Amino acid sequence: MFTAFCFMFFAFTLLFSLFSVVIFVLRLKLGCKCEICHAYLTSSWTEEFDNLCDWFTHLLEKSATGTIHIHVLGNTITANPENVEHILKTRFENYPKGKPFAAILGDLLGKGIFNVDGDSWKFQRKMASLELGSISIRRHGFDIVSSEIQSRLLPLLSSVSGKQQVSDLQDVFRRFSFDNICKFSFGLDPGCLELSLPVSEFAEAFDLASRLSAQRGLASSPLIWKLKRLLNLGTEKQLKQAIKLVNELAQKMINQRRETGFSDRNDLLSRFMGTINDDKYLRDIVVSFLLAGRDTVASGLTSFFWLLSQHPEVESAIREELERVVRSSDGRQQIASYDQIRDMHYLHAALCESLRLFPPIQFDSKFALEDDILPDCTFVRKGTRVTYHPYAMGRMERVWGPDCLEYKPGRWLKDGRYVPENPFKYPVFQAGQRVCLGKEMALVEMKCVVLAIISRFNIRVPNPKQTPRFAPGLTANVRGGLPVLVQEKAIVS
Image (tube, rainbow, N blue to C red; front, side, top):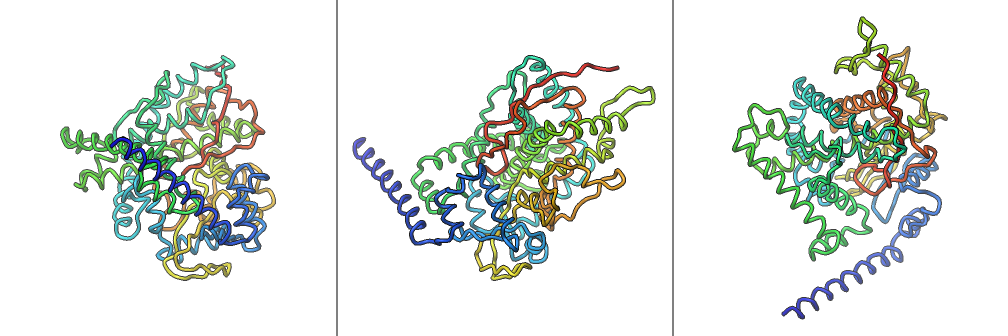
């Protein structure tokens, strides 16, 4: 019996390997033979570029329309603001997330807001808008972030200060944001940022599930990962195990709420339980928000401090603004309040400029329901994947001018006050009907962290000129993290 099982297992493995090779060869031999598709399939672009997003940026910059085609992927990619407005606003109904995207993330996100279209999306959108738009929930989020900063982030940085010990700031921010979003979404404290930097089984499972789900989208054919899932092999087996752990924790939290009551709690799970009775649907919704708030904030903070290490003048300007805004009548500097943080225009501009160059979500895709023509006259066939690319858009001279590659917070200011840009020119938080509902809360969280750190510490990157290399994933995480040296400032009373 055992021998027969082993034979079947290895036979399946061999057949799968041969099938994968055949798929690749067929795409290489029978697919499009254009230069771009050949470079993608053979990965020859890596000879000149460290990141796939930088290669796409190069191709989009060379394109007369700011739009390119990766034929073997059935993907039209654009960095043209007029096209972005067309996709996200003018013809919104023609460009849903689509079934191919839903299949890629379906095991992790289920029918959560970021993985559905139509009535289900409208229902969740309306419900989330009411919750996240309330002053009480925003204050609750602010209190969670402030507590995590004072009780964990600052003590952790103090513990490594002055030791000439290199710390991974990206890992610190990922732990910080995971603690916050778990408290906000589930009312659960995983304690990832405690001084011992413990290993969280839930955090590891969630990260693995996110990473492996994203890898599905990089496969040369969806048949590959679907077959692996059918046979429960390799990364699909790992993904299944990771999602099982996430599901178990989510169900445990739901059961606890039903036993202890949820009407007097402020976390998202408790708030949604007042409207939704389906446990699976609750799980999908809350896990979606967990994904949205987990790595995006950490990614934004990581790139911000990398840029800050190269621009000490920006750091000085933020400190000056902080002192000016929060100084009390007796001259002492106080902790910035929620309202004071919102009034710090230069800090807001500095973060927006950082996100322009390093958006946490580098690209976003939709699928055309019907044939269409984009404003730049690009024909889009029904079923085509259409991708807009915020990372590339932030580097387009035709969009941002000849200084597009420079970090200049001043481009967002007029007479010292922040002036927002056209959201279709700057779709970092999406735009149109799917614009990010958590935008303000995410920015406030980032501002709280920035102010808390630069008011007490000098953060230095040993090799600030080294260009970030991104790991494959749903968000822009830097491969190898962000090594920094931390030095506590002398306290001036």
